[in-house]
Image (cartoon, rainbow, N blue to C red; front, top):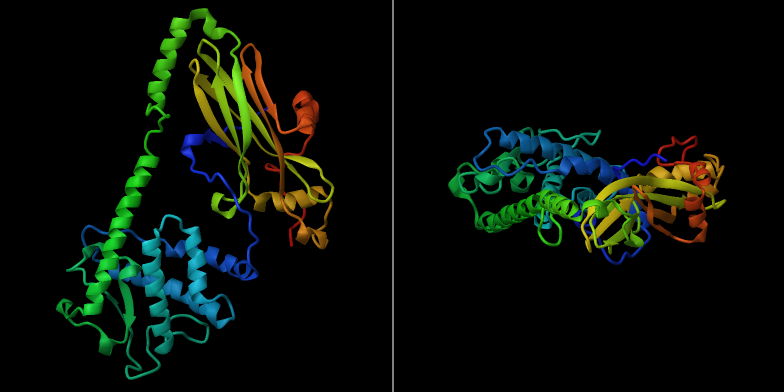
Length: 395
């Protein structure tokens, strides 16, 4: 049985919650979701600058206009509230810290409100630079930095330091910064600190992976090779592996809509060993209770005597992928009203530890799943919905 290996990774490479609370998404959120997801890429900051970017103002202005167009289009056509739209859109930009999010949302709301007051949106809800209302009618609106680059060069292309203003109120010199603008500088400094802290954390998390003893994979392999050499022929014997498994993560929006099975392996042998951990994750259709495969894979693990290894095994695709395929498997047509009410269900798992001399350990969720572990042909006959293309369409 082939096992793709791209869906399994060490547990210490993943941060997960020990408790999962499943809540229903409010109806308003369901309405906002598509627009928020579409807007999210445009909210990605263009990066802080150690030295002012000579084209930074134009870059920030162009980015802001795209976002303002989306905000106005949604507001003018009865769509989501602009602030609610921004709040949910940032959920799809986890790389932006909360301090930065607050500043960006604040400046964008101020610019959108000012643009509406100056009549900068045409009948198609698109931004135009020419003012059509107020004392500056006929003139072009001005984009300027809230805190001048001579004071804070880091935000030369960041919307958090951008405002839209009528030309008669625009700043003519950097020394004309107001007390309010000076106070806002503290928030921008907090963004710099937040950005640097998150960058340091990412560098640590994405650096060389280590075990509980702080050893890198290279160091662990060196120690394992030394133990194998010392053990001699004993290292080739069937190991005694203690295997315990449990569902670690339910499918949620925060983890991409996937399930994860956790496995803990303990080599209780007196010698090192090399084993392969194979897994199959199952789903079940809601209407006819048919089983199907949500993901499968394998990973080779080299373990020293008494070593403990933790693994996470994820479903290959998310709920959005499985929903139409599971409905098709149940024979629910595109217009079947039952199709709207069905949900993706996780069923269980097989985790098998294989040694060159045979099966070292086996874990299954329950006796029904055990039957698949004992009958390769029965397991092989199950639909691999993580690979299949849907024949219908979820409505």
